[in-house]
Length: 212
Image 1 (cartoon, rainbow, N blue to C red):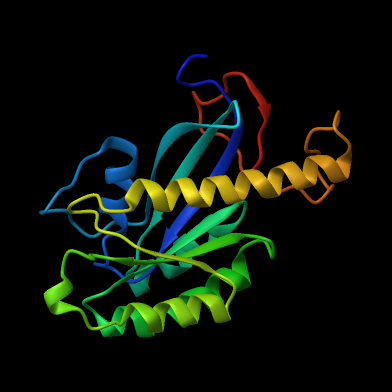
Image 2: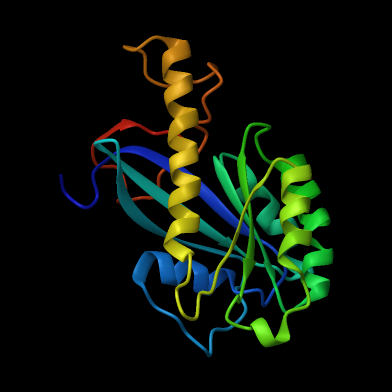
């Protein structure tokens, strides 16, 4: 199967305060790159990576939403059609963690009710500067029915695991929906499967299911 062909497409959004490392999580997962001089994201950008799940080619289209307040009105529209979200804070920044509740509320207000959400404590390499205890964040995640992991985009710790965990969770949700519709039925508009995402130009090769 060619690189631009896939069976299922999931849109995943990265949200959280500016400076928590969303862009570097994106580039570490999609290109295995890290940029110490990375600048704040302006508006929205995205990248893709394809993985295999139970013999299916699953393509993740990951959107990096700007954390600055002045771009919030722009990025809100990009929650629509998202199947998954990674809510990122910096373990060395208590304020970025305190804002997690606000980001989660915004996500719940704008995204599909069934969106899969993972809470991500990034910059785990900064253990000597830690301000957010792991167990505190883990408890918050459990309370709000979120999966949880700590990562480091700098040394790549748990980055692949975080994204792949989300994609596997989305695939399990997809399988349940397929069973509810009948084995021979694919996702259809109005049947409860999120398919509102419109592929970018040039991304219109073979797709057996355009889910999210």
